[in-house]
Length: 634
Ligand SMILES: Nc1ncnc2c1ncn2[C@@H]1O[C@H](COP(=O)(O)OP(=O)(O)OP(=O)(O)O)[C@@H](O)[C@H]1O
Image (cartoon, rainbow, N blue to C red; front, side, top):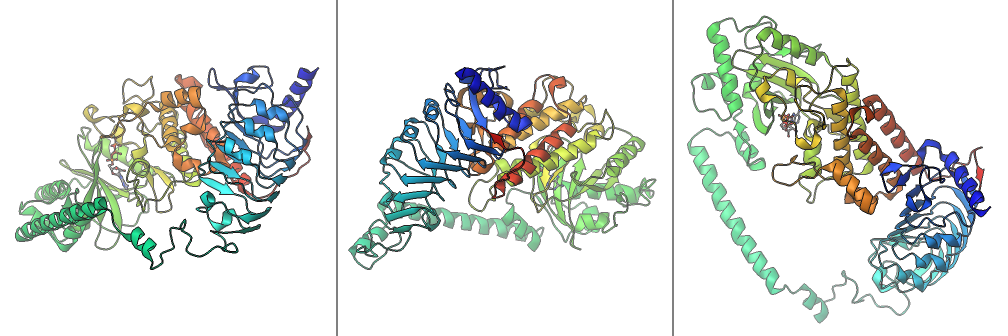
């Protein structure tokens, strides 16, 4: 009878959440119905029931035998009363999210029998009583949120914990803040009767507390602190010598360049900014180029050759272009510049891809464009113009717009809008140092949605239309981090020798000929891209110098061993309120990267799913409990 009532309660729980609940079967990594029908209780690893209007007391027995449960989330509900003692049987629990309920009573002692806990959030409830010394049992605990409860007494010395996050604000606590918690900000303690750093000093405490890193009195103590160690001095000396050498080297380099009269001020600035890049001199005129003087970049040289040909022939193959030396613009795009302007522009190499080299060109009149110089175009001019016109006609806000092209016998140039934030690949795997904008959940899920919409749009153009080269270096970002898919249609312009050298990590298992890519293969590549966004790891061979991983297999193995938080990029784990949504996106990624094409969702399904989970993460950010008619009595 007991089991039956449990099952009834579980079924009630499950039916209350519909499709939003994720129950994960640890054995075969598929979502399962944990009410005992398809998977056993001891295989349930995650239980997420956030903001589903659960109310009333949690019945005893509901958590028994969930021995492999790692994450339990009941946050944003209206649960009342105390926690059932069978929670202590979830001995593998790592993440316990109970915030924003109406739970009351003392924090039960049995909770301290959960030695694996890493994150505990009990904030915004009615818990009372004192904070027990037993919190020291949680030796792995990193996050402890107890804010906005009725907790009283003093904060115990939690010296066995090394917490990353801590908050006890808005309780009834008094006494002094223990030394090892004084590194947290005021916000962690406000709304109590506490004293001591970071709050105001306790009676009898002096401002020269040795524990504070900011107290620099003129006395011996501070002198000692300010003294540099031998190692630091050696470091400074070596650093200074290295900087001096670098300066001398730079001076020699600049002088040499000046003497050869080939570098303008713009070039110097560009060299400084992009020492590895080639630079086109902005003051190089067409005639300079025609004279055959050394060309600062391959693009300038090539474009000049193109111009020479056009002028020598006197016809310029202008059939579709409307005249010699003319760029052909698409649609109603303003002819803001012409080929001469492009040649005069200062430029830098963005990178070499499968289809040629990409340059950033800053035109004298202001616009910044990306120019792709195609190599190995073997099709006829007529074919090229037809195909490129089709590419130019594709117009969607999630695709990088192709603005113009140039065609001559020797030179084919494509002009795109320049995407100022570069590629997703560079953002994820590039400079991780200071000054870099961390990619939070909002941005990552927004990028995923933008990219998905771009691919969905392409697929909507016809059942045989696919991108064929979805990867993170082809997802470019605007100033506001909106994602745009680039490189659409290029594989049809080039010969077989330079068909997309698809990075192994993104290639669907069924793709043997890179020219024959289906929409479902795009979905697979997109799945890998999602895994890359979530894990921060690059797929195999995606980076030249670093080892990548086989993302779908890696994720599955982590799921098997250490589901789930361990999978995510550390930068994302800071945003715990969206863990459910992260898990849902991970699930979608795994679905997209299914081995068999038929098992993969369509891009429209993918777009709908991402829209839905972004909506729900927004909803959960709202700081209120939504009581509705669907309240379920437990
Ligand atoms: N419109 C653009 N705006 C900003 N950067 C761009 C633009 N187009 C390309 N890039 C950048 O230039 C570099 C080279 O791009 P390109 O598309 O030629 O090669 P790829 O994407 O690395 O490989 P593939 O040719 O296989 O797609 C990449 O780092 C890419 O992010």
